[in-house]
Amino acid sequence: QVQLVESGGGLVQAGGSLRLSCAASGTIFSINVMGWYRQAPGKQRELVAAITSGGGTNYANSVKGRFTISRDNAKNTVYLQMNSLKPEDTAVYYCNAYYSVIDSDYWGQGTQVTVSS
Image (cartoon, rainbow, N blue to C red; front, side, top):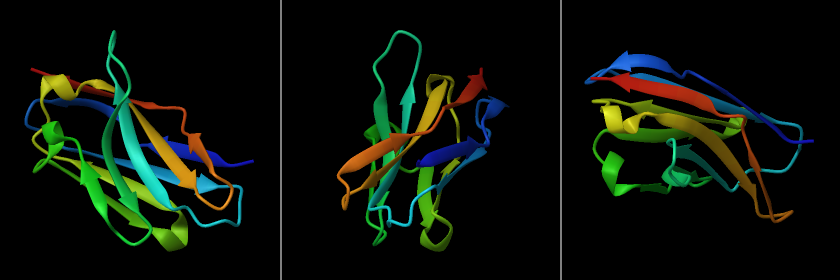
């Protein structure tokens, strides 16, 4: 069973930084796409950033220039470096991993990020 374990959330003041990590385990298959999504209260879950196994990246317009996604394929781990945080970045952040060989994706349990003004 695939498991995604997230860490790194917390409370930070506006303008501060946080780094999220997500480690995947439980399968021998390679992960094609790893990503971070977020869901604020009363809002739909949205893509924040994604990265392919080859290093291609995609970012939401709202985080471009402030957030950086990276991954360590050997460790099946994805990171999200978040700088210049704003109160509107407050949300639960979820890690996602997509395995094309089994056409399945998996979610982490979520980690809370709170940015105070």
